[in-house]
Image (cartoon, rainbow, N blue to C red; front, side):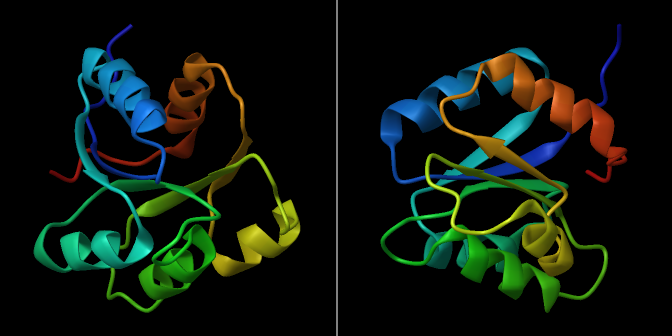
Length: 126
């Protein structure tokens, strides 16, 4: 099966998790840029369009909810956002109302990320 290639920004403060997700998504043909906090992610998004942002909810230096709100203020086309967390203190309904496309509970199988990406309908905008 041929998958569309996406420009993805991965935002998480756990280097090991970022590395495993970047490796996995790279093998799927995606171009992945990394950030360790929401502040860095916002700066990167100001310089380069991304199709998708995968972000942890809780991070020092700006978490995923704050990042999601900032993305919502961006002019279209905005990247889709997948929230990931081991501690969801936001419901799926609240996250979707803020603009999240999906939520993944840690720990998750890496194939779940691909399944969610494939189901988003994000076009190849790069």
